[in-house]
Image (cartoon, rainbow, N blue to C red; front, side, top):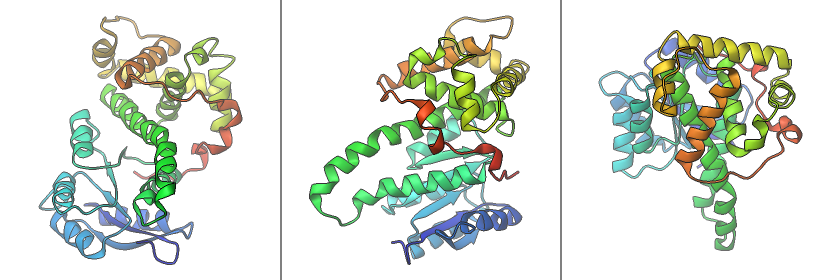
Length: 288
């Protein structure tokens, strides 16, 4: 349960210096408090079982036992809280395993500080319907959060694919592509005239220019093509391209892949009128 209106967090990471940086990040806004830290899997589970935090942040690799082991034991003991895995290991199997064991979200290092804070707030709000409230409020509240839960899951899937392709999360193109795919999944029409629509919209969200968005995405695609991008692109699209795709082709293929995978329609949003709700990455704190 939250105390004094603050979200209670337990964090586990094998790097103690990183733990201190993460603690400072979480507590700097005043609405969260770190009630325990450890670099050890069994110690993390013991801490979680004892304190029953609102949120658990786990690295995949910990001392003695890994983060997935902690999630497995939490599931067995029916310990319910928001669980976010943060790790430099961002392979698709690891992400899927973590999600299967109850992780609510997965973030690849280096993470953006403000993005982490936003995700924690969103996910803790989603867990609120399970608290003792009037039953009449439960049905509409759960219905309202379903699209957001779907979007968070989609965002994690896009991140996993980009990581498999070899696009590092530390470059801006990674975040621009992820946002572009999210937008294209929700609205097919946004891919029509991307230089006059998609790029400017993303530029407004991240307080930059359309030309910088285009260059950053192009650089990210080139980076992927030098690594594992061509093979993953083939797995998604069904055909092998010798030359790297254009920005539009790259985004469109990913968007169509996830649209078919989720087999559902997201609410059509006007991104040009909702930019104030998007994380301003240029002001975020990156961890390495």
